[in-house]
Length: 448
Image (cartoon, rainbow, N blue to C red; front, side):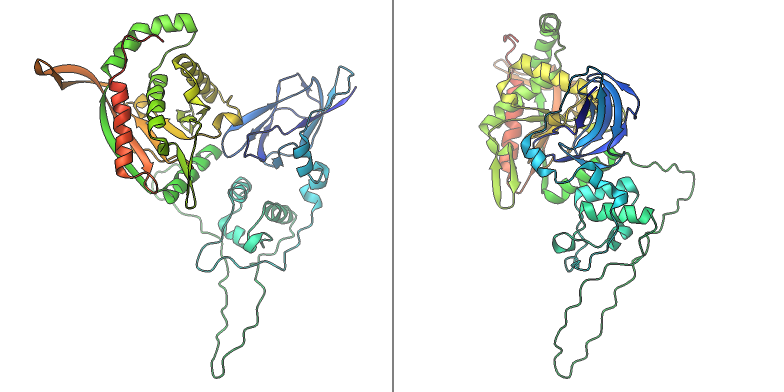
C-alpha cells in the first residue's frame, strides 16, 4: 500500500492560504475518490476538499481553525490500490513552503516576546491585517489582548506567527499580562526645560455589555462577520452616491413569457430575468467602460474583461457574490446556464473559490424579495453596483403617434451606487439611463 499526500488545493489567483473549518474524516476512516475530507474557508467562500485517492485516512496534519498555506500537505491517505501515488504540487508553491507541517506544530514553538517591537503609528489605532483579525475572532482573542501582543512585522504590526505563538503560549500558561513597550530613545533635553515622562495607561479587558429586558444574544457566524467587515470597509473606502430611474420592461416580460417553455425544453434550463438584465448591462458597460474599473491610489484601472458579480442570497440568510467570468463572451443561452449553475452551487454550498474571484461589476436583484428599490453598497474593489427592483404592473402615461394614453405596463426601478472618486453624477446617471433604455427597447422578435 502507498501513502498519498492530500494537499491544500489552489484556491484562486490571489488566495495563498485557507482556514480549516471542519474535518469530515478522522484517522482510520475509509474515504473514496472525490469524497469530502474537510471543509475550508477563505475570505471569499467556504468550500470542500475532496480526496484524491481511495483508502484509509492515515494522519491529519492540521487541526480545525488552523490557517494553512496553499500547497501544504494537510493529510495522508493509505491507498488501497497498491500503486504509488503522489499529489502534484506546483513547483512555485513548493518553493514557498519553507517548513513541513510537523515543524509548524504550535505546541513546539516557545513564546518569546520581541524586544524590537515598534510603537503603533502616532495618532491612530494599531493596524491589524484581515488574517490576524480572522484568527483572533476564531480563537476568542479580544482587541485588548491583541494590543498586548508584541509585533515583529513592519512598524510593529502583529503577524500571523506572532498571534499563533501568543495563543499557544497562553493556552500553556506562558503569557504574562503586560503590554509590549517600544524601545526608549534618549532625547537631549533643552536647557531649563522639564520633561514629564509619559506613562502608558494599562490596557484593560473590554467590559462585557449587559443587556436589560427580554433579549436574545446571537453570535455572528463567520460569513456574517466577513459580510459586516466588507460592508463597513466599503463605506470607508468609496464615496458612495446612488442614482435612481424607472424602466418599462413590458416587452421583456411578454417575450420571456412567450419563449420560456420552449427555452427550457430546448436548453434544459429555466430562463429567468437575470440573464436578460445582465445582457443589457454588458452592452452599456462597453459604451461606458469606467463603470468597469477599480481605483488604486491615484490610478484608475479600467478592466477590459467584463466579469459580472451577481449577489445571491443563501438559505441561512447570508449573502455571497459568485462571478460570471468574461460574461461579455456569452450569448443569452450561455448567460442563463451560467447564472443557474452559480445560483444552484451557492445555495448548496458547492461554489469553488474561483467562482467568487475577479468580479468587475455587480448586479443585485432586490426585487426577488419584493423590494421596489435599494441603495446597494459597492462590492470592493469595484466602483459600481446596480440594484434591480421588483417588476410591478402600474398605470402609466404612454406616448404614441396618436397622442398620450394611459396603459397598464410592467414597471421596474433601477438604482446605481457608484464611487464618486472616479464616477461623477453625469456619468453615473448616463449609464443608468442607458441600461433602462436598453431594457425598454428589448427586441420582442428576437430568438434566444
